[in-house]
Amino acid sequence: MKIRQANYKDVSKISPVFDEYRQFYGQNPNITGASRFLQDRMEHAQSIIFVAEDPNTGEIAGFTQLYPVFSSISMQRSYLLNDLFVKKTFRKQGIAKQLIAEAKSFTKSNSGKGLELSTSTHNNEARTLYTNEGFEQEKEFLTYFWKSS
Image (cartoon, rainbow, N blue to C red; front, side, top):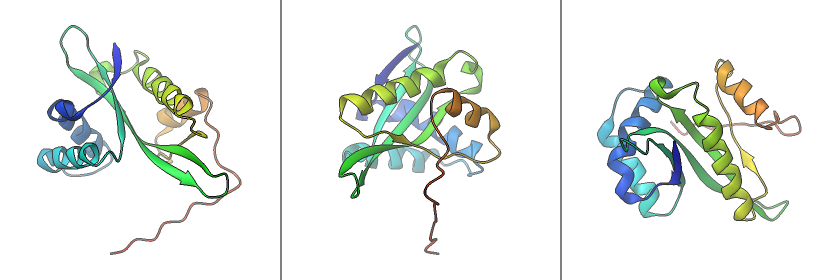
């Protein structure tokens, strides 16, 4: 599997996988919205997307999307690993680990403080993966969310 950073030319190939990811989290299918969302992120340099691509077929097997965030306290940049998804037919092949490794490498090479992520409390498989990959559950800070609507 080839892991590489995506560019705007990849949006049409990533969008169906991104939409499948959204459906995994209970969202309705919306391939048009998925394409528009990814295109916006790329056009405005608001995220970094890495894809796992089958070198023989060019099929996108999975992706991860990082968003830069900043800490005023440490005065450093970190990255929010907001999305990580591998298509069902490609699971159990170590692809998620490869995508995480690429995200870690990118973070280090860009002088990032680290990677932050969150996942559903019910997603035990992902929680195990993240723990095995060196992520630690935050114990010092509580996370709150205000919903505007």
